[in-house]
Length: 270
Image (cartoon, rainbow, N blue to C red; front, side, top):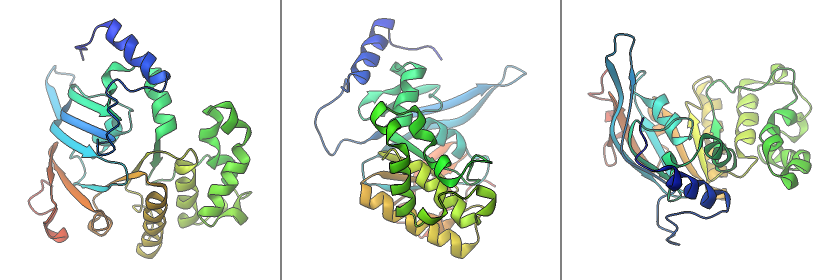
């Protein structure tokens, strides 16, 4: 992708971010934390044909929002998650995080922003085998500032206690139930107090009852912390918990607010 900004523009953006300033800082509490504007994502296939994954996506997420994005497999949910999580950048269009155009940031600056401001919860937990629950939770703090680094075990125990697993801090993942493993994963996602939580099919590997308990916990902690929560799912029961709902079909994002939840996937391409 060719940047529309000069190297000087990019240097200024990186310096402003690293100094704790936003180029678009207007002290407006109502401004979106995440703002996608006509975002597309495409890749070139082996035969030089373009595969269009996201098409003209517009999305605003504010602090404290709980948003669900619903779609079938292959609709572009993972690609959208990667862009929201600063793991990828749009092919065209613009994404702003707290007013800063993400495409103006170098990859290492985006990584710093991702580590400090975004927490990820995955379907398959992605816990490190051979490490205790506490060691898994504090992993993000190994890359944090000096103060958080030296307090990592204290911070890790605090969040494990919050998710009800302080007594299991010394237990390795294979000795934990699926619900306990997901609670460890949630604790890991929240240990740096992120402003945005991205949950990718967070109940997909759990039974219905355990999944409901995990979503209750995730909802509660996100609300208490004031973080924005975005849930990527094909489960309509999970989507129904969100205050704002969208559906993604063949790379096109549309609002489903006001639509009965059982109708959200109707008409969506299989």
